[in-house]
Image (tube, rainbow, N blue to C red; front, top):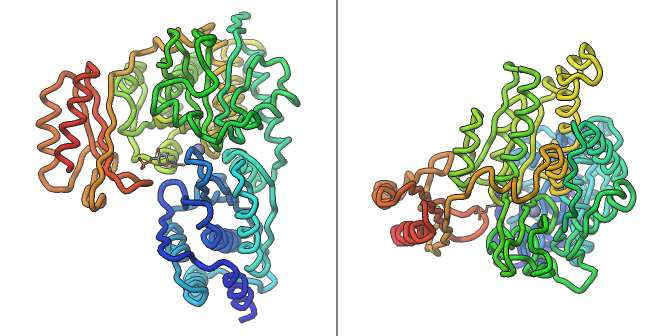
Length: 537
Ligand code: 16G
Ligand code: ZN
Protein backbone atom coordinates (compact mmCIF):
# COMPACT_ATOMS: atom_id res chain seq x y z
CA UNK A 1 0.00 0.00 0.00
CA UNK A 2 2.92 2.36 0.44
CA UNK A 3 3.44 1.81 -3.26
CA UNK A 4 -0.01 3.12 -3.98
CA UNK A 5 0.58 6.09 -1.71
CA UNK A 6 3.55 7.26 -3.73
CA UNK A 7 1.60 6.92 -6.98
CA UNK A 8 -1.36 8.83 -5.59
CA UNK A 9 0.83 11.55 -4.22
CA UNK A 10 2.65 12.14 -7.46
CA UNK A 11 -0.55 11.92 -9.52
CA UNK A 12 -2.11 14.69 -7.47
CA UNK A 13 0.59 16.97 -8.82
CA UNK A 14 -0.54 16.39 -12.42
CA UNK A 15 -4.30 16.65 -12.78
CA UNK A 16 -5.83 15.75 -16.14
CA UNK A 17 -6.93 18.89 -18.00
CA UNK A 18 -10.63 18.94 -18.80
CA UNK A 19 -11.75 17.69 -22.19
CA UNK A 20 -8.45 16.05 -23.01
CA UNK A 21 -9.02 12.83 -24.93
CA UNK A 22 -5.89 11.10 -26.10
CA UNK A 23 -4.96 8.02 -28.05
CA UNK A 24 -1.48 6.49 -28.29
CA UNK A 25 -1.96 6.15 -32.05
CA UNK A 26 0.84 5.54 -34.53
CA UNK A 27 3.36 7.82 -32.88
CA UNK A 28 2.59 8.06 -29.17
CA UNK A 29 0.58 10.82 -27.52
CA UNK A 30 0.68 14.26 -29.08
CA UNK A 31 -1.01 17.53 -28.43
CA UNK A 32 -0.65 21.10 -27.27
CA UNK A 33 2.33 21.11 -24.91
CA UNK A 34 0.50 23.05 -22.20
CA UNK A 35 -1.97 20.17 -21.81
CA UNK A 36 0.48 17.30 -21.68
CA UNK A 37 2.06 17.23 -18.21
CA UNK A 38 -0.36 14.65 -16.82
CA UNK A 39 0.01 12.51 -19.93
CA UNK A 40 3.78 12.52 -19.79
CA UNK A 41 3.74 11.84 -16.06
CA UNK A 42 1.51 8.83 -16.61
CA UNK A 43 3.64 7.54 -19.46
CA UNK A 44 6.54 7.80 -17.00
CA UNK A 45 4.65 5.43 -14.70
CA UNK A 46 3.86 3.11 -17.60
CA UNK A 47 7.52 3.02 -18.63
CA UNK A 48 8.56 2.02 -15.12
CA UNK A 49 6.00 -0.79 -15.12
CA UNK A 50 7.23 -1.92 -18.53
CA UNK A 51 10.79 -1.98 -17.22
CA UNK A 52 9.75 -4.03 -14.18
CA UNK A 53 7.72 -6.39 -16.33
CA UNK A 54 10.71 -7.06 -18.60
CA UNK A 55 13.31 -6.86 -15.82
CA UNK A 56 16.14 -6.52 -15.97
CA UNK A 57 15.83 -4.09 -18.85
CA UNK A 58 15.91 -0.42 -19.61
CA UNK A 59 13.00 1.34 -21.28
CA UNK A 60 13.19 4.62 -23.23
CA UNK A 61 10.83 7.56 -23.02
CA UNK A 62 11.09 10.27 -25.68
CA UNK A 63 9.47 13.67 -25.48
CA UNK A 64 8.85 14.98 -28.98
CA UNK A 65 6.14 15.97 -31.42
CA UNK A 66 8.37 15.34 -34.45
CA UNK A 67 7.29 17.49 -37.42
CA UNK A 68 4.36 19.12 -35.63
CA UNK A 69 4.43 22.77 -34.67
CA UNK A 70 6.72 24.02 -31.95
CA UNK A 71 3.91 24.65 -29.46
CA UNK A 72 2.95 20.97 -29.60
CA UNK A 73 4.74 18.21 -27.84
CA UNK A 74 4.32 14.49 -27.31
CA UNK A 75 5.65 11.35 -25.72
CA UNK A 76 6.47 7.86 -26.91
CA UNK A 77 8.04 4.79 -25.40
CA UNK A 78 10.89 2.61 -26.64
CA UNK A 79 10.96 -1.08 -25.75
CA UNK A 80 14.28 -2.70 -24.69
CA UNK A 81 15.14 -3.68 -28.29
CA UNK A 82 14.83 -0.04 -29.33
CA UNK A 83 11.57 -0.75 -31.11
CA UNK A 84 8.33 1.03 -30.40
CA UNK A 85 6.32 0.04 -27.34
CA UNK A 86 4.64 -3.33 -27.89
CA UNK A 87 1.14 -2.82 -29.28
CA UNK A 88 -0.19 -5.06 -26.52
CA UNK A 89 0.38 -2.26 -24.05
CA UNK A 90 -1.24 0.49 -26.09
CA UNK A 91 -4.75 -0.02 -24.68
CA UNK A 92 -3.33 0.38 -21.16
CA UNK A 93 -1.53 3.53 -22.29
CA UNK A 94 -4.83 4.92 -23.58
CA UNK A 95 -6.67 4.02 -20.39
CA UNK A 96 -4.27 5.61 -17.97
CA UNK A 97 -3.70 8.71 -20.11
CA UNK A 98 -7.45 9.36 -20.00
CA UNK A 99 -8.13 8.35 -16.38
CA UNK A 100 -10.26 11.14 -14.95
CA UNK A 101 -8.89 11.24 -11.38
CA UNK A 102 -5.80 10.11 -9.46
CA UNK A 103 -7.96 7.46 -7.73
CA UNK A 104 -9.19 6.11 -11.04
CA UNK A 105 -5.63 6.12 -12.34
CA UNK A 106 -4.29 4.20 -9.38
CA UNK A 107 -7.04 1.61 -9.57
CA UNK A 108 -6.34 1.05 -13.28
CA UNK A 109 -2.66 0.63 -12.51
CA UNK A 110 -3.38 -1.76 -9.68
CA UNK A 111 -5.59 -3.94 -11.87
CA UNK A 112 -3.03 -3.96 -14.65
CA UNK A 113 -0.12 -4.77 -12.36
CA UNK A 114 -2.04 -7.73 -11.02
CA UNK A 115 -3.08 -9.01 -14.43
CA UNK A 116 0.43 -8.67 -15.85
CA UNK A 117 1.96 -10.09 -12.67
CA UNK A 118 4.39 -7.23 -12.29
CA UNK A 119 6.22 -7.26 -8.98
CA UNK A 120 6.79 -3.84 -7.54
CA UNK A 121 9.29 -2.92 -4.86
CA UNK A 122 9.66 -6.39 -3.36
CA UNK A 123 13.42 -6.21 -3.39
CA UNK A 124 13.62 -7.91 -6.78
CA UNK A 125 15.04 -6.30 -9.92
CA UNK A 126 14.52 -2.54 -10.07
CA UNK A 127 13.35 -0.65 -13.11
CA UNK A 128 15.19 1.92 -15.20
CA UNK A 129 13.86 4.43 -17.69
CA UNK A 130 16.04 6.57 -19.96
CA UNK A 131 14.56 9.91 -20.89
CA UNK A 132 15.27 12.09 -23.90
CA UNK A 133 13.66 15.15 -25.43
CA UNK A 134 13.87 17.11 -28.66
CA UNK A 135 14.71 20.82 -28.74
CA UNK A 136 11.19 22.11 -28.00
CA UNK A 137 11.13 24.71 -25.19
CA UNK A 138 8.34 22.81 -23.43
CA UNK A 139 10.49 19.69 -23.28
CA UNK A 140 12.35 20.45 -20.10
CA UNK A 141 9.28 20.80 -17.87
CA UNK A 142 7.67 17.74 -19.46
CA UNK A 143 10.81 15.75 -18.85
CA UNK A 144 10.57 16.65 -15.14
CA UNK A 145 6.98 15.36 -15.15
CA UNK A 146 8.17 12.11 -16.70
CA UNK A 147 10.92 11.79 -14.11
CA UNK A 148 8.44 12.18 -11.27
CA UNK A 149 6.17 9.59 -12.87
CA UNK A 150 9.01 7.11 -13.32
CA UNK A 151 10.29 7.39 -9.78
CA UNK A 152 6.86 7.29 -8.17
CA UNK A 153 6.93 3.58 -8.94
CA UNK A 154 8.96 2.06 -6.09
CA UNK A 155 12.29 0.64 -7.17
CA UNK A 156 12.42 2.59 -10.42
CA UNK A 157 14.88 5.24 -11.47
CA UNK A 158 14.87 7.80 -14.26
CA UNK A 159 18.01 8.77 -16.15
CA UNK A 160 17.85 12.13 -17.95
CA UNK A 161 19.85 11.98 -21.18
CA UNK A 162 18.90 15.52 -22.20
CA UNK A 163 18.36 16.71 -25.74
CA UNK A 164 18.59 13.91 -28.31
CA UNK A 165 17.13 12.89 -31.63
CA UNK A 166 14.44 10.22 -31.33
CA UNK A 167 16.62 7.60 -33.05
CA UNK A 168 19.57 8.37 -30.77
CA UNK A 169 17.46 7.51 -27.74
CA UNK A 170 16.21 4.30 -29.35
CA UNK A 171 19.77 3.38 -30.33
CA UNK A 172 21.06 3.98 -26.83
CA UNK A 173 18.28 1.97 -25.19
CA UNK A 174 18.96 -0.91 -27.56
CA UNK A 175 22.72 -0.77 -26.91
CA UNK A 176 22.20 -0.62 -23.16
CA UNK A 177 20.03 -3.71 -23.16
CA UNK A 178 22.57 -5.55 -25.29
CA UNK A 179 25.23 -4.76 -22.73
CA UNK A 180 27.10 -2.48 -25.15
CA UNK A 181 28.44 1.02 -24.63
CA UNK A 182 25.32 3.15 -24.73
CA UNK A 183 26.48 6.75 -24.65
CA UNK A 184 25.97 9.44 -27.27
CA UNK A 185 29.71 9.23 -27.91
CA UNK A 186 29.37 5.51 -28.62
CA UNK A 187 26.57 6.31 -31.08
CA UNK A 188 28.72 8.83 -32.94
CA UNK A 189 31.71 6.49 -32.92
CA UNK A 190 29.69 3.61 -34.28
CA UNK A 191 28.39 5.76 -37.15
CA UNK A 192 31.84 7.13 -37.84
CA UNK A 193 33.61 3.77 -37.90
CA UNK A 194 31.11 2.11 -40.20
CA UNK A 195 30.88 5.16 -42.48
CA UNK A 196 34.66 5.31 -42.88
CA UNK A 197 34.79 1.59 -43.48
CA UNK A 198 32.26 1.92 -46.32
CA UNK A 199 34.16 4.85 -47.84
CA UNK A 200 37.39 2.83 -47.76
CA UNK A 201 35.63 0.01 -49.61
CA UNK A 202 34.68 2.18 -52.57
CA UNK A 203 36.33 0.40 -55.52
CA UNK A 204 37.81 3.35 -57.40
CA UNK A 205 38.11 6.82 -56.15
CA UNK A 206 34.74 7.73 -57.58
CA UNK A 207 34.29 10.88 -55.59
CA UNK A 208 31.01 12.70 -55.69
CA UNK A 209 32.99 15.19 -53.60
CA UNK A 210 30.44 17.96 -54.24
CA UNK A 211 28.98 19.53 -51.15
CA UNK A 212 25.72 18.61 -49.50
CA UNK A 213 23.45 21.16 -47.83
CA UNK A 214 21.36 20.08 -44.86
CA UNK A 215 18.11 21.70 -43.75
CA UNK A 216 17.99 20.92 -40.01
CA UNK A 217 14.31 21.97 -39.61
CA UNK A 218 15.48 24.30 -36.80
CA UNK A 219 15.52 21.23 -34.61
CA UNK A 220 17.77 18.80 -32.82
CA UNK A 221 18.95 16.99 -35.98
CA UNK A 222 21.03 19.86 -37.34
CA UNK A 223 22.63 20.38 -33.97
CA UNK A 224 23.62 16.71 -33.63
CA UNK A 225 24.88 16.61 -37.19
CA UNK A 226 27.13 19.58 -36.39
CA UNK A 227 28.45 17.70 -33.39
CA UNK A 228 29.17 14.65 -35.52
CA UNK A 229 31.02 16.73 -38.12
CA UNK A 230 32.94 18.73 -35.56
CA UNK A 231 34.07 15.83 -33.41
CA UNK A 232 34.22 12.82 -35.70
CA UNK A 233 33.83 13.35 -39.43
CA UNK A 234 35.60 16.63 -40.00
CA UNK A 235 36.38 16.09 -43.66
CA UNK A 236 32.82 15.51 -44.76
CA UNK A 237 31.63 18.55 -46.73
CA UNK A 238 28.20 19.34 -45.35
CA UNK A 239 26.82 22.82 -44.95
CA UNK A 240 24.11 23.00 -42.30
CA UNK A 241 21.29 25.54 -42.46
CA UNK A 242 18.22 26.01 -40.28
CA UNK A 243 20.02 25.03 -37.12
CA UNK A 244 17.55 26.98 -34.99
CA UNK A 245 20.22 29.40 -33.87
CA UNK A 246 19.44 31.97 -36.54
CA UNK A 247 15.96 32.78 -35.24
CA UNK A 248 14.11 30.21 -37.34
CA UNK A 249 11.16 28.37 -35.83
CA UNK A 250 11.07 24.58 -35.54
CA UNK A 251 9.32 22.98 -38.54
CA UNK A 252 8.00 26.32 -39.79
CA UNK A 253 8.38 26.29 -43.58
CA UNK A 254 11.40 24.03 -43.09
CA UNK A 255 12.09 20.34 -42.58
CA UNK A 256 11.33 17.03 -44.25
CA UNK A 257 7.58 17.11 -43.70
CA UNK A 258 7.22 20.56 -45.24
CA UNK A 259 9.50 19.78 -48.18
CA UNK A 260 7.85 16.45 -48.93
CA UNK A 261 4.29 17.76 -48.69
CA UNK A 262 4.72 21.13 -50.39
CA UNK A 263 7.41 20.13 -52.89
CA UNK A 264 9.05 23.55 -52.58
CA UNK A 265 12.39 24.64 -51.07
CA UNK A 266 12.52 25.21 -47.32
CA UNK A 267 13.32 28.68 -45.96
CA UNK A 268 16.99 29.48 -46.31
CA UNK A 269 17.33 27.86 -49.76
CA UNK A 270 17.04 29.62 -53.11
CA UNK A 271 18.43 30.41 -56.54
CA UNK A 272 22.03 30.06 -55.43
CA UNK A 273 21.39 26.41 -54.69
CA UNK A 274 20.31 25.35 -58.17
CA UNK A 275 21.64 21.86 -58.88
CA UNK A 276 23.10 21.39 -55.40
CA UNK A 277 22.37 18.17 -53.47
CA UNK A 278 20.18 19.05 -50.48
CA UNK A 279 18.60 17.06 -47.66
CA UNK A 280 15.95 17.86 -45.05
CA UNK A 281 15.48 16.30 -41.62
CA UNK A 282 12.27 16.49 -39.63
CA UNK A 283 11.98 17.95 -36.12
CA UNK A 284 13.27 14.91 -34.23
CA UNK A 285 15.50 13.60 -37.03
CA UNK A 286 13.86 10.27 -37.68
CA UNK A 287 12.93 11.24 -41.24
CA UNK A 288 14.86 12.54 -44.21
CA UNK A 289 14.21 13.44 -47.82
CA UNK A 290 16.65 14.71 -50.46
CA UNK A 291 15.90 17.37 -53.05
CA UNK A 292 17.45 19.75 -55.54
CA UNK A 293 16.41 22.84 -57.40
CA UNK A 294 16.41 22.45 -61.14
CA UNK A 295 15.62 26.06 -61.94
CA UNK A 296 15.52 29.34 -60.08
CA UNK A 297 11.96 28.70 -58.95
CA UNK A 298 10.86 27.41 -55.60
CA UNK A 299 9.64 24.10 -56.94
CA UNK A 300 11.99 21.21 -56.21
CA UNK A 301 12.84 17.81 -57.54
CA UNK A 302 12.05 15.59 -54.56
CA UNK A 303 13.87 12.35 -53.73
CA UNK A 304 11.53 10.93 -51.13
CA UNK A 305 11.56 7.82 -48.95
CA UNK A 306 10.72 5.65 -51.96
CA UNK A 307 13.78 6.88 -53.82
CA UNK A 308 16.02 6.44 -50.78
CA UNK A 309 14.64 2.92 -50.42
CA UNK A 310 15.38 2.21 -54.08
CA UNK A 311 18.96 3.45 -53.74
CA UNK A 312 19.55 1.31 -50.65
CA UNK A 313 17.91 -1.73 -52.21
CA UNK A 314 20.09 -1.42 -55.28
CA UNK A 315 23.26 -1.24 -53.19
CA UNK A 316 22.37 -4.15 -50.93
CA UNK A 317 21.29 -6.24 -53.91
CA UNK A 318 24.59 -5.49 -55.66
CA UNK A 319 26.52 -6.87 -52.68
CA UNK A 320 24.32 -9.96 -52.45
CA UNK A 321 24.85 -10.60 -56.16
CA UNK A 322 28.60 -10.64 -55.61
CA UNK A 323 28.10 -13.22 -52.89
CA UNK A 324 25.77 -15.17 -55.13
CA UNK A 325 23.88 -15.62 -51.91
CA UNK A 326 20.58 -17.12 -52.90
CA UNK A 327 19.80 -18.07 -49.32
CA UNK A 328 19.57 -14.48 -48.08
CA UNK A 329 15.95 -13.39 -48.03
CA UNK A 330 16.01 -9.74 -49.06
CA UNK A 331 12.68 -7.94 -48.92
CA UNK A 332 11.37 -4.43 -49.14
CA UNK A 333 8.36 -3.02 -47.33
CA UNK A 334 6.31 -0.07 -48.53
CA UNK A 335 2.93 1.42 -47.74
CA UNK A 336 0.06 2.16 -50.10
CA UNK A 337 1.49 5.70 -50.35
CA UNK A 338 4.57 4.46 -52.16
CA UNK A 339 4.65 5.86 -55.65
CA UNK A 340 3.60 3.18 -58.15
CA UNK A 341 6.71 3.88 -60.22
CA UNK A 342 8.93 2.99 -57.24
CA UNK A 343 7.11 -0.29 -56.69
CA UNK A 344 7.50 -1.18 -60.38
CA UNK A 345 11.18 -0.30 -60.20
CA UNK A 346 11.80 -2.46 -57.13
CA UNK A 347 9.90 -5.39 -58.59
CA UNK A 348 11.90 -4.92 -61.79
CA UNK A 349 15.05 -5.48 -59.74
CA UNK A 350 13.59 -8.86 -58.87
CA UNK A 351 12.90 -7.90 -55.27
CA UNK A 352 10.13 -9.16 -53.06
CA UNK A 353 7.91 -6.15 -52.24
CA UNK A 354 5.35 -6.35 -49.45
CA UNK A 355 2.93 -3.74 -48.17
CA UNK A 356 2.19 -2.68 -44.61
CA UNK A 357 -0.28 -0.37 -42.97
CA UNK A 358 0.88 3.24 -42.50
CA UNK A 359 2.96 3.86 -39.35
CA UNK A 360 6.54 2.87 -38.69
CA UNK A 361 5.76 0.03 -36.31
CA UNK A 362 3.77 -1.80 -38.98
CA UNK A 363 6.53 -1.57 -41.58
CA UNK A 364 9.19 -2.48 -39.05
CA UNK A 365 7.35 -5.63 -38.05
CA UNK A 366 7.15 -6.85 -41.65
CA UNK A 367 10.75 -5.95 -42.47
CA UNK A 368 11.91 -7.97 -39.46
CA UNK A 369 10.62 -11.12 -41.15
CA UNK A 370 13.43 -11.00 -43.72
CA UNK A 371 17.17 -11.67 -43.36
CA UNK A 372 17.61 -8.18 -44.73
CA UNK A 373 14.44 -6.10 -44.73
CA UNK A 374 14.41 -2.56 -46.09
CA UNK A 375 11.43 -0.37 -45.27
CA UNK A 376 10.53 3.22 -46.01
CA UNK A 377 7.44 5.35 -45.99
CA UNK A 378 7.29 7.87 -48.82
CA UNK A 379 7.59 10.59 -46.17
CA UNK A 380 11.15 9.54 -45.35
CA UNK A 381 10.72 7.26 -42.32
CA UNK A 382 12.67 4.05 -42.73
CA UNK A 383 15.72 1.89 -42.20
CA UNK A 384 17.30 -1.45 -43.08
CA UNK A 385 16.94 -4.37 -40.68
CA UNK A 386 19.49 -7.20 -40.61
CA UNK A 387 18.55 -10.32 -38.71
CA UNK A 388 21.11 -11.26 -36.09
CA UNK A 389 21.50 -14.71 -37.60
CA UNK A 390 22.30 -13.26 -40.97
CA UNK A 391 24.94 -10.88 -39.57
CA UNK A 392 26.55 -13.78 -37.70
CA UNK A 393 26.55 -15.78 -40.91
CA UNK A 394 28.25 -12.92 -42.75
CA UNK A 395 30.90 -12.50 -40.09
CA UNK A 396 31.65 -16.24 -40.19
CA UNK A 397 31.72 -16.24 -43.95
CA UNK A 398 34.27 -13.43 -44.01
CA UNK A 399 36.75 -15.56 -42.09
CA UNK A 400 37.02 -17.94 -45.03
CA UNK A 401 37.46 -15.25 -47.69
CA UNK A 402 40.71 -13.76 -48.87
CA UNK A 403 41.24 -10.18 -47.85
CA UNK A 404 40.50 -7.73 -50.64
CA UNK A 405 38.56 -10.20 -52.81
CA UNK A 406 35.24 -9.04 -54.25
CA UNK A 407 33.35 -11.40 -51.96
CA UNK A 408 35.21 -10.24 -48.90
CA UNK A 409 34.53 -6.60 -49.76
CA UNK A 410 30.85 -7.29 -50.34
CA UNK A 411 30.56 -9.01 -46.97
CA UNK A 412 32.40 -6.17 -45.27
CA UNK A 413 30.09 -3.64 -46.87
CA UNK A 414 26.99 -5.46 -45.68
CA UNK A 415 28.32 -5.74 -42.14
CA UNK A 416 29.25 -2.06 -42.15
CA UNK A 417 25.78 -1.11 -43.40
CA UNK A 418 24.24 -3.11 -40.56
CA UNK A 419 26.30 -1.05 -38.11
CA UNK A 420 25.75 2.28 -39.82
CA UNK A 421 22.03 2.15 -40.34
CA UNK A 422 20.01 2.35 -37.13
CA UNK A 423 18.59 -1.11 -36.34
CA UNK A 424 16.07 0.30 -33.88
CA UNK A 425 14.19 2.92 -35.91
CA UNK A 426 14.60 5.14 -38.95
CA UNK A 427 17.38 7.66 -38.33
CA UNK A 428 17.95 10.72 -40.49
CA UNK A 429 21.63 11.03 -39.53
CA UNK A 430 22.54 7.44 -40.35
CA UNK A 431 20.26 7.52 -43.41
CA UNK A 432 22.11 10.59 -44.69
CA UNK A 433 25.48 8.93 -44.20
CA UNK A 434 24.38 5.83 -46.08
CA UNK A 435 22.95 7.82 -48.99
CA UNK A 436 26.23 9.73 -49.24
CA UNK A 437 28.25 6.50 -49.26
CA UNK A 438 26.10 4.83 -51.87
CA UNK A 439 26.15 7.86 -54.17
CA UNK A 440 29.95 7.92 -53.98
CA UNK A 441 30.11 4.18 -54.48
CA UNK A 442 28.00 4.47 -57.63
CA UNK A 443 29.73 7.67 -58.70
CA UNK A 444 26.31 9.30 -59.03
CA UNK A 445 25.09 12.85 -58.70
CA UNK A 446 21.72 13.52 -57.09
CA UNK A 447 20.32 14.10 -60.58
CA UNK A 448 21.54 10.70 -61.76
CA UNK A 449 20.03 9.06 -58.68
CA UNK A 450 16.73 10.79 -59.40
CA UNK A 451 16.65 9.14 -62.82
CA UNK A 452 16.25 5.63 -61.35
CA UNK A 453 12.59 6.06 -62.17
CA UNK A 454 10.17 8.92 -62.67
CA UNK A 455 7.46 9.37 -60.06
CA UNK A 456 3.90 9.08 -61.30
CA UNK A 457 1.99 12.32 -60.63
CA UNK A 458 -0.05 11.99 -57.45
CA UNK A 459 -2.53 13.92 -55.40
CA UNK A 460 -3.51 13.77 -51.74
CA UNK A 461 -6.76 15.16 -50.39
CA UNK A 462 -8.02 15.15 -46.84
CA UNK A 463 -11.73 15.01 -46.22
CA UNK A 464 -13.28 16.10 -42.96
CA UNK A 465 -15.97 13.68 -41.91
CA UNK A 466 -18.17 13.31 -38.83
CA UNK A 467 -16.72 9.90 -38.06
CA UNK A 468 -13.52 8.69 -39.68
CA UNK A 469 -13.89 5.23 -38.11
CA UNK A 470 -16.71 4.62 -40.59
CA UNK A 471 -13.92 3.90 -43.07
CA UNK A 472 -12.42 0.47 -42.55
CA UNK A 473 -9.70 -0.83 -44.86
CA UNK A 474 -7.89 -4.07 -45.57
CA UNK A 475 -4.71 -4.59 -43.58
CA UNK A 476 -2.58 -3.02 -46.31
CA UNK A 477 -4.96 -0.08 -46.65
CA UNK A 478 -5.19 -0.55 -50.39
CA UNK A 479 -8.94 -1.30 -50.35
CA UNK A 480 -11.86 -0.05 -48.31
CA UNK A 481 -14.15 -2.65 -46.74
CA UNK A 482 -16.52 -0.05 -45.30
CA UNK A 483 -18.68 1.87 -46.00
CA UNK A 484 -20.15 -0.98 -48.01
CA UNK A 485 -19.99 -0.42 -51.74
CA UNK A 486 -17.50 2.45 -51.63
CA UNK A 487 -14.65 0.36 -53.02
CA UNK A 488 -16.72 -0.54 -56.09
CA UNK A 489 -17.37 3.13 -56.62
CA UNK A 490 -13.66 3.93 -56.22
CA UNK A 491 -12.77 1.18 -58.68
CA UNK A 492 -15.24 2.71 -61.10
CA UNK A 493 -13.34 6.01 -60.94
CA UNK A 494 -9.92 4.39 -61.17
CA UNK A 495 -10.89 2.64 -64.39
CA UNK A 496 -11.35 5.96 -66.12
CA UNK A 497 -7.62 6.76 -65.94
CA UNK A 498 -4.52 5.29 -67.47
CA UNK A 499 -2.39 3.76 -64.69
CA UNK A 500 -4.94 5.08 -62.24
CA UNK A 501 -4.61 4.05 -58.60
CA UNK A 502 -6.42 5.42 -55.56
CA UNK A 503 -7.25 4.49 -52.00
CA UNK A 504 -8.83 5.96 -48.90
CA UNK A 505 -7.90 5.45 -45.24
CA UNK A 506 -8.79 7.01 -41.91
CA UNK A 507 -5.92 9.12 -40.58
CA UNK A 508 -4.24 7.83 -37.44
CA UNK A 509 -3.30 11.32 -36.29
CA UNK A 510 -6.13 13.67 -37.33
CA UNK A 511 -9.89 13.55 -37.55
CA UNK A 512 -9.97 13.14 -41.32
CA UNK A 513 -10.16 10.54 -44.06
CA UNK A 514 -7.20 10.68 -46.43
CA UNK A 515 -7.43 10.15 -50.17
CA UNK A 516 -4.47 9.23 -52.36
CA UNK A 517 -4.60 9.15 -56.13
CA UNK A 518 -2.06 8.70 -58.89
CA UNK A 519 -2.17 8.53 -62.70
CA UNK A 520 0.02 9.30 -65.70
CA UNK A 521 -0.65 13.06 -65.73
CA UNK A 522 -1.09 15.57 -62.93
CA UNK A 523 -4.51 16.56 -64.31
CA UNK A 524 -5.64 12.95 -64.16
CA UNK A 525 -4.26 12.41 -60.64
CA UNK A 526 -6.00 15.60 -59.46
CA UNK A 527 -9.26 14.67 -61.05
CA UNK A 528 -9.16 11.10 -59.72
CA UNK A 529 -8.33 12.39 -56.23
CA UNK A 530 -11.18 14.87 -56.32
CA UNK A 531 -13.76 12.38 -57.51
CA UNK A 532 -12.75 9.82 -54.88
CA UNK A 533 -12.94 12.57 -52.24
CA UNK A 534 -16.50 13.26 -53.42
CA UNK A 535 -17.37 9.63 -52.74
CA UNK A 536 -16.11 9.94 -49.17
CA UNK A 537 -18.07 13.09 -48.36
C1 16G B 1 2.69 9.04 -37.80
C2 16G B 1 3.68 7.97 -38.13
C3 16G B 1 4.12 8.10 -39.57
C4 16G B 1 2.92 8.08 -40.48
C5 16G B 1 1.92 9.14 -40.07
C6 16G B 1 0.63 8.99 -40.84
C7 16G B 1 5.39 6.99 -36.73
C8 16G B 1 6.59 7.23 -35.86
N1 16G B 1 4.85 8.06 -37.29
O1 16G B 1 3.27 10.30 -37.84
O2 16G B 1 4.95 7.02 -39.86
O3 16G B 1 3.31 8.30 -41.81
O4 16G B 1 1.62 8.96 -38.71
O5 16G B 1 -0.29 9.92 -40.39
O6 16G B 1 4.93 5.86 -36.87
P1 16G B 1 -1.82 9.79 -40.73
O7 16G B 1 -2.32 8.50 -40.15
O8 16G B 1 -2.46 10.99 -40.14
O9 16G B 1 -1.93 9.79 -42.22
ZN1 ZN C 1 9.87 12.51 -36.68
